[in-house]
Amino acid sequence: MSTLNKPGIDFSDTNEFVDFISAKKKGELIVGYFDFEGYDGMALSIMIIFDTRTSQFDLDLQWISLGLDLFGDTLQESYVYRFPSIIKLLEYLASKYLLSVSDIPLSYSFDNKKFPNPITHTNRKSDFKASWKNFQTDFKKGVFLDTTQELIYDSLEHKS
Image (cartoon, rainbow, N blue to C red):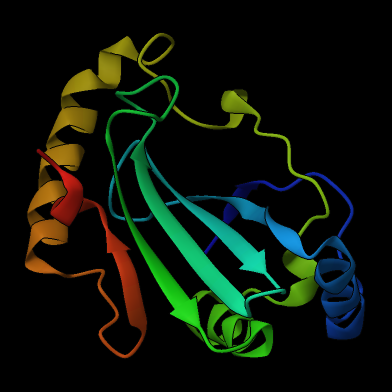
């Protein structure tokens, strides 16, 4: 997976990361936005949501059509998985997405110049539409669903 935008200071090791979230107690960290290969104009956003007081550690995955949706708030689908510990979540990130704790920035700033968008890439709109349509078909089929993990949110189940 190639990151297109990962500014910020990274955690040096797992202990530093665990100490950080333990001190913060509750919050979220954006791991990054990644080019979603095979789907032109799309990005995968990966975020960790945690509450150490209740031992809740969630991985929020959002697939976004930035080529058609300038702010990434309309054309997206998502899954949220819950993990029994932050260590299990980090192990999953490492095995599934090849991301280590040192890839997680302390703070993340989205740079929309790194991604296609509907204003500057109008000539590619038909490609982005086709890609979004293919993605929607695959998402509905469960192509991206990991049934080995505890799913606590599926955007398809929450559409009216």
